[in-house]
Amino acid sequence: MKSKFCFALSAIAALTLSASVQAQSQGSWLVRGGIMQLAPQVTSGDLSAPSLPGAKTAVSNSTQLAGGVTYMWSNNLAIDLPLALPFKHDLYGAGSIAGVGKIGDNKVIPATVMLQYRFGEANAMFRPYLGIGATYAKFDSEHSTAALTALTGGTPANPTTISIQSKMAATFQVGGSYRIDERWFVDGGITRTPLKTRNTLSSGQTLDITLNPIGISLGVGMRF
Image 1 (tube, rainbow, N blue to C red):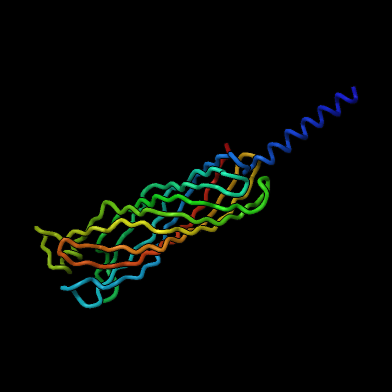
Image 2 (image 1 turned 135 degrees about the horizontal axis):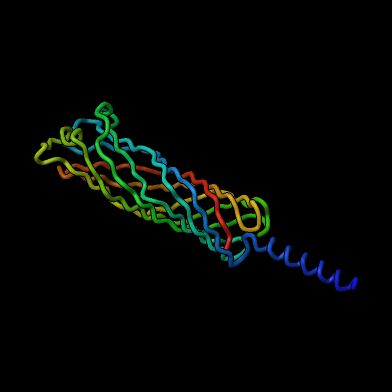
C-alpha cells in the first residue's frame, strides 16, 4: 500500500513538472491580445516645388487593439506574428506651414513577422526576449483636407489628393513575457522599424519622410 502511495505521489510530481516545463517549450503555441501604440519618430523633408519653402509634415500617434501568435520553434527560438487592426494617423503641417493644422490622414496595416530569442528556461516565471524581423507597411485610405488643397494650388472642384508609398523595412524588438500560471501570461514589447517613404500629391509635388515608428504593446495571452 505504501509503495502504491509513493508511486502515485511520484506520478503527480512528474505530471506537475511536465506541465511546468511546457510553459513556453518547443512546440507550444502562444496567443495574445491587448493594445499597441504606434508612434512615428518623424523627420520630414520639404515639399517639392512649387510650394512654400520649408513646407513639411508631422504625423500623429495611433493606438489600436492588437495581439499576435507565437510558435516556439525550440525552447528558446520563437516565430512571432504580431496582429492589429489598421492604425489611423493624422497628418499635420510642419515647418513653414505649421499653423495650417491637419492636411490629411491615412491608415496603415503593418504586416510583420519576427524571429525571437527568449532567454531563460522554458518554465521560467519571466522570460525577456530580443527579436528581429521584417515589416511591410501598407498605406491605405489616404484623405486630404481643404488646407492641403489651398496650399498646393487646388480648388474645391479639383482638390489635391495624396498617395503614400507602401514600403518594406526591418523591425527590431525587445520585450518580455511574465507567466501568471501554466497557461496564462502577460506580454509586453517595444519595436522600432527604420522606415522611409514618399508622399505623392495629385499636383505632382512629392515629400520624402522618415517615419521610424516605435511600437509599444501590452497584452494578455494563453498557451496552447
